[in-house]
Amino acid sequence: MNAMDSVQGTGTTVLLTGLPRSGTTLVCALLNELADTVALVEPIPFQPDGDHDRALAQIEEFIATTRDSAVRSGAVISRNICGTIPGDLVSPPTAGKGLRSFHQERGVVSLGRSVSQNFHLFIKHLGEFTAMAGPLAERHPLMAIVRNPLHVLASWQTIDLPINRGHFRSAECFSPALARDLAREPVRLRRQVLLLAWLLEAYRTFPSERILRYEDLIRTPRAYLARLSSRAQEPARPLLVHAPSRRYAGIDFRPLAEALTPIEPLAAHFYPGFGEDLARCMGGGTP
Image (cartoon, rainbow, N blue to C red; front, side, top):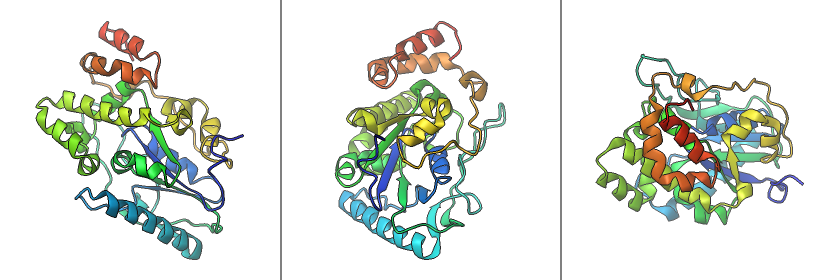
């Protein structure tokens, strides 16, 4: 039986969270290729005051409104590029040409197809859903997408987002403790590691069947998607394998590996060979 069969009943809504730069937007794009399935990227305009009760009510209202709109008019709200939900909202890496830009547009997206009353709805938010994981998991299936933390940290060095500076505004708004910890740490790289630890600590409480690894998506995409939907199929687009040392050319992995050493036991919960990855990088090897 599919791990999600027990929760994907009539009109099921599944919430997605995960590490920034772990393939969460790509997963949404692939889910949108499936029959009677809609996956949205950060569609909800949360207030920055961190009011959990209001945010939880806003999520439920958004789900109801989206389900009605998708069926009636085939129109939904999502972050998008020119009306399409792409596989990535960040521009590709370009060595020596500055930080990668992020597309901030949130607006109406036309599905271009009809969906039934019982369509599967996926909604992705990272910081907010992680900070509210406990109450959210009581209401809807909540899945977390992770990726090798060393590769995630390398990616963070290349993008023009607060995460590059060791901040995660959507998470900090809903977690005052996280905001305080980050404010107390003057070193950017250490702030980034604090963020990774906060995220991984949250996901360590998830049942194992609710954790999805990016590397498994690249290796066996249909099996990966089958953990989310019984309607899974091979993606129409090819999923390219990028060696991190080439993907993030110009990034020195050794200091990143050294900075991650204190959270190696936590990362090993998701990646049992993580300590070996760090040792190889600190010894001058490639990730």
